[in-house]
Length: 195
Image (cartoon, rainbow, N blue to C red; front, side):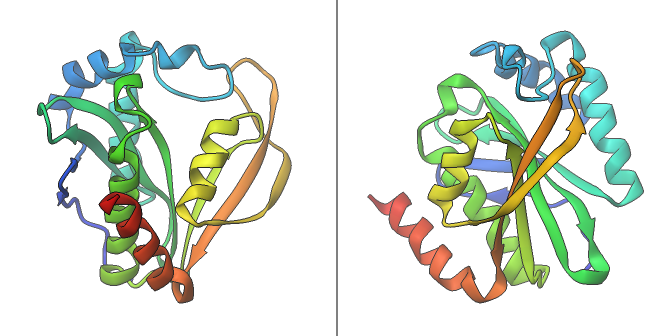
């Protein structure tokens, strides 16, 4: 699998930009849109924790286990979220798309579908991945439904997989798309965006 270097991915509805500290103020505004950090079953940073979250993601990028992006809307140029390639396993040509959040005003529109299309296309067609995973909290029903709508298949549930910041234990639902499914998934996502 080629090295995962920072790259800009541009679509009709959004652009994925390599995460940078200069994104701080725009991401602070984006996360405040919907008070996303208050969702107990997610790990979305509060506005006052955005600087440390950017630093955390960039440190993981430096170690080779994450490639983080800021998401910019095409319609108004505003930052509206973050996403990453994470848990990168170059030897086995696998990675996860995760640690994703969008401002409330960027949800339920074409932005997420297009961002996933761009990330999946790059993973399968440029990086040569054999599988891409998605993981979410069992209780995050909206996320589970959104992942399934992409065409990913549920692999299983990791019970008591991790401890949340509040001390509760998270059951993690694991989904994946494998290379042999990519052409069908790509056609599905392009159809969704064309409607």
